Length: 558
Image (cartoon, rainbow, N blue to C red; front, side):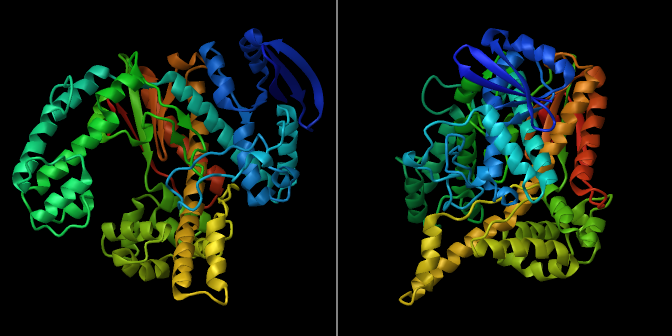
């Protein structure tokens, strides 16, 4: 049974019951103030709730002490079905763009040619959005009429479970010690200054000015630093750390140290602490599906870039433990399952995949295996990666063929699709115009070079899209299964009194658990990873090993 929630007017909620056949079997109007009690009572029958946006509906329920088992997030599902090649012929996918169509600015994982999900002008919008019930029924029809309903149903369920998890993690917060954070910053930077730079940055700035003989140098200005380096006879083209590390000059160590500490101060310094940590918790605002591949993003707080220098401030409450877990070599193992490459599966069976690639004879060293695999998935065709690619192709032809075919599709401007049905966007209008210009009778060599370069860029995007998007799906299934196991482990008790997820980063999770349940929570993390692998790849022998450490501090797990 589905219960579809909508807000027909301020202060009231309409709950519509829809049976397994998609037939409306009843509706009920509830005062908004009574919604938590209504949901709590209905949860005894384990319905699947359907609502516009979990970020809007679930937090008030959590605040009232109500947890739900499952939902359909119609906004997230709409985005997937609108773009998926599996549902491209549906009425939902072919309808004019309307108010259910979001306009997210995706992260940097994709080329700059595509910066929004839809280029939607105001005059293209429908005047009124369909109700939640109408949208729910339209999505149901799109899935049922798709070329692979089972894949899409699993994807939408996983995406919606992720939305519940994100809301719960924000509500619970990551256990965080402001005192430890302050101590870590003080140790690295010196005491918190009332104004200006901390003492360590001041000292490094003074050393840098001395070594470069530039008494007025502003170390926070890359153009000034670059000019000072060149005046010192250093033929560098930028102030990027990877370039400076190869330069032998006494100014380079303090400059690199200054850059690193300055980044820490800017991203996770005292201002960050004041803004994001309260009552012993860091409350990041996760955005499920915030990246075009399905990876999560965050709105402020930088939860997905929590640096190692401050992880010692992530500490369990007294009587509790942190279970810190990460999946080893997730994307290469996803590629193994996607391609059905038996040789690569054998290389990763029961051991480190990169060591297994070495044992297969494809390369001589683990570092080479890693470079070659990353090159295959991200399209690095020059340098060490390019040199090793022919050897990797001979050893694992099915795996390499899959990413090569995805790259060629992207170069042609075609869509590629993940394991469960998330499809890549098509390149934007400027891309098509560039390709057309290169094919015109009056095209120049410059037109053709520009077109080839853009095609290769988009091919690199689609090459990685199929792997990264499928890895995001595996992670969602991992967390959804783990959430169920943790709920059982906590005997369906209140969220904050039971083992619960508090952090997620692509292939890593942290669970906060009562000390007496911590090892069981760690076992659940490992079991859920295996279950996610079976769910997505059936009996194909690809393994997803997970290490789970029971610790008092996040820093102890690294």
